[in-house]
Structure formats: C-alpha cells, structure tokens
Length: 115
Image (cartoon, rainbow, N blue to C red; front, side, top):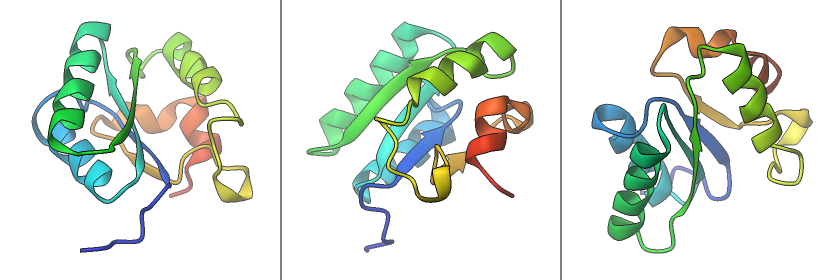
C-alpha cells in the first residue's frame, strides 16, 4: 500500500516499544523519514536497530529525551534543524504521532505541528 509518505519527516514519541515502535516501523515501511523517540539512548538505539533489521533501506534516526521537559523539547528543536527538515510551510515535522499528550505542549511541536 502506498500512503504517499515517501520522504516526509515523522516524529513518533514513545516509540521504543509497543504501539509506538509499531507505528514507527509502519511509517518506515511507507518510506517516511522517522525520528524514533524514547527517554534513553539505549532504548532508542535498540528500536532503530530493530526497525532497520525488518525494513530494508529504512530512514530512521533517534532522539533520546523526555519531551515533557522544556530542555528536551529545545534539544529536539535543535536536532530537527532546517537542514534535516524539508517540510513545507516552515513546519519541522510533517507527521507527529504523540503517544503522550504533554508532547504537543512543547515548543518544537507547537511550531511544527498544527492540529
């Protein structure tokens, strides 16, 4: 199935296990550029390896940080700098899957995601 996600930048929060990991893998299968997020570098790296093992040529990166904190949100904002993003209308992310409600309150998502 082609959902037209090729090359779109997706942020999936809480995506190191469970439904978040499945969503990140599904987006990678649709050729989206996926940023996996979790609280620890170890879990983020483990999730990236798992996705890349199952999805050939997956474009997956990781960002470790608790996005309910301002410091992590600002770090994500720097991580998703304009050279990484190709989104239209100056949006950082074209797809945001917030598996925790407080993620949408962060500055990076307010600028990069419109409800």
